[in-house]
Length: 250
Image (cartoon, rainbow, N blue to C red; front, side, top):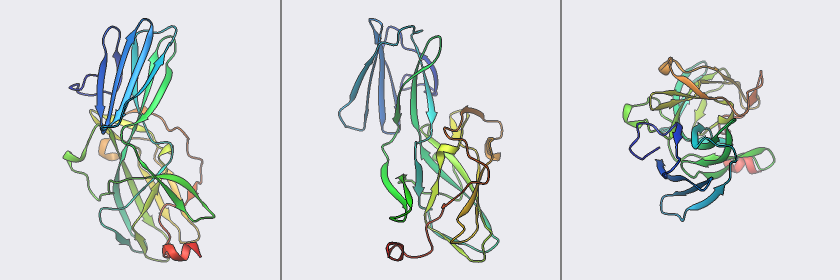
């Protein structure tokens, strides 16, 4: 869990000396003393938050696990585009993960879950119908390059399919990441593929999660299951309305 480690994810011995990690804008220090586990974390130059724990039966080891944010995330494509009737397109979202820290003993005990990057709140939907989510500053891309993989980011592939009778303007996308697993391929993190079938303005979209590592990382190992498994036949609004935002409020 030192700053120069190959990967920070996994199990680490913190007995007798403090350890520090950096992921995204997060800096977290873990130490043990007098049977206590002490944590400090901060983002960028903000003052650190401190907490102290008496975990009882404890091995002196902690586990760091990558988990998805607890709300849907909303992102804009790198360049908005029209998905024609019957067309297919594959895009990739880079989602900043949370760190779940557990004390290891007879059974793991979760102590904190901290975002690697603070995310801004946003509202997805209309004033009468919608849900609270996070806004991503990163952009959805049509291709992923090697230098775009960072250890605190999960690459989420989306297979978009326009099965409606209209062309679809893709300018904002909502992804419900709580239904996704996290897979690790070396230091690269992936989610399972999400297939989104757009059925029309009033019909919303039918959403399916593959439940396995994407084809781009077929040998990747699953390290975190979904926090909320997806029910069969799930539909939800994935794309921004074709109407203007002013019309949505009328």
